[in-house]
Each structure stands twice: as structure tokens, then as C-alpha cells.
Length: 396
Image (cartoon, rainbow, N blue to C red):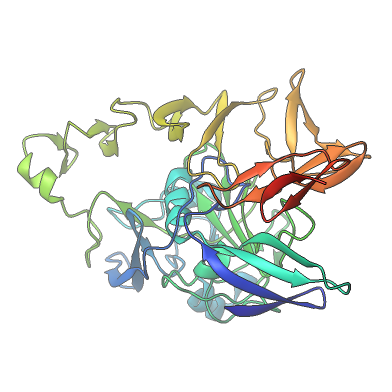
């Protein structure tokens, strides 16, 4: 157990809820428990001789440092070379898409999701108010698992459990101004077909759930086309090496006759698209440039990113697929689609999260959370004649 201070109150973080939710704002996401600290290695970038720590997390080998390869439209924070050594370079979208070493690539939304699935940590927080009443809620501290142990403003430092060592490198905006170093880290992701990324913050801001839900600074962001931000590179479907190119797996070696570019692949579970080996989705090939792959309910299927998006509900292991609303993605936890317009869930004109809360006679209540099921169930009830006790709805 450990103590965490929030808004002047000392909160007790109890045992981790295994296999719990990751971050709700990240569409096409996943959830899961920890599987131990990632195994580390070293990548040598033959283009400039720089070396980077790498770490195996989930199904991928990730750079454990921000890329610092001087190419294209990239910058050191405040034009200070020492900042590049500390945080890596800041890249615009077009440069980032081609900046990784050979055999490595910019992580997709699905690959970021796999990272979070492996490192997800949702903890039950217990708090006692001044009247002696004990309250509990779930707190998502996944970002803490990924952040470095130092370098973040305020109480923003992490545990670096897996050796990912996320640093707050800040950003450069379209006016050429550098901002938020020490406070926030931004990283590009590739598979949305648009300039979008991941943000980690030093703040404990409340982006979902009840007013007590602390989502400690890890979300997806969109519309980043005019920004310069950090980047990590990742390798899936191969092993990290000192030179970068993918080393064929045993399955690929056994099926060396099936070639995709320079790599072999297993046609039973993989396919070749534009020279890249890609895992099949629900046993079928698809176009990774236009479609994503996610578990929708109890089956895996491809979805069209032009008209659909994926979202992981709180406490779920699978992705729900939603149709875009008027061509736009939205957060199904706090919004809904009506007549092709995105609307906020509101109670007495106040926004709320429909996954964790409900509105009864213009009063907002927390849903009754039961840990007897996996994932946990969240139920509404009639506060006039019912109450939630130990995760069960009972009559008064």
C-alpha cells in the first residue's frame, strides 16, 4: 500500500485491481494487469551512431528513450542542444512518420493500446470523510507505471515499473513557441490517418468518472498537425537487434518461402500489405491504412476508420465499436450522438460520466460498483428507496 495526497487529503491506495481498465479517452484501446518489468536491451542507430535503451512490453519492443535523430523539421526544446540529450528532439507530423530507424516504426493506436493493456494499473482508493464515513473509488495510475522516476513537475514523477521512462519533453507550437517541458510529454501515434498522439501530464486531472476519479495524466489527443512533439519507435513481430532490422521469428524462418519485403511470415495468422507483415484480424486480412482491428464484444473484427472508432469502457477488456457522429469521434463515456451532433451527458446542466454516474431527478449519483464480477459491474439504482452497500444494491 502507499499514500497519495490529493487536494489536501491523504488517500490510501489499496491493492491493485488486476486486469482493470486503462484510459478511457484513448479510442481503440485495451486493458489488463501487469506481467512484470519489461526486459531491456540496446538499439544502435546506424544513421548517426546514437544508442537507445529498449524494453520489451506486451507484444512490442519499445525505445525506452525519446528519439534524438536530427532530420527534417525537428527541433531541440528552446533550441538548446542539452534539451535534446535529455528529452530527445521534437518532430512535426510529416517528419515523424519517416524518422524511425530501419526495422522500427511509429507506434499505431493499437500498439499504444497493447502497451497500456500490459501496464494498466487501476487501484482502489479508500478515503474517510470528517463524519467518519468511508468511501472507495477506482483510480487509474497507469501513467505512473510508465513515467520516469524524476524530471516531472510537482507530484508528477512515476514509478517507471517497466523501464519505459516517459519524460515530459513539452512541445513546440505553430508560432515557434516552446512550452510545457517538465509538465507534459507528447508522443506521436500513427494509425489514425491524421496527426494525433498520446499525452502524459504531471497533473492529476479528472477526465472521467466521479469528481474523485483521478486519471493521472494519460490520454489520447487529436488535431496535432501544427505541433512539434516527441516520438518513440517500436518493433512488433520481431526481436530487437543492435542494427534495427527485424529478426525473423521461428515461425517466419520455418515458412521462409512466404516473403513480405525482406521478412518471412506465417500466412495462417499474418498477411503482407505494402511490404509490411501484419497480423490478421479475426482470421481475415484487411487494409491497415484504412481499417483498424479490435475486439468488439467477444470477437475480433476490422473496422473502417472513416466511419467508425473503437472505445474501451471503464473496467472492460474488449473494445466497443461506435459509428462516428457527423464524421467525428467522441467520448461515449461523457457524450452521445443525436441527429449527427455530439451532445454531452448532463444532469442539472452539469456534465457527467455515464459509465460511472447516473442522473436521478436532476441529482447526480455514483453507480454501485461490484467487484464480484470480472470486469466489475456498475449499476444504477433508485436512491429514493435503494442504496449501494459493499457493491450491492439493497432496499432501504
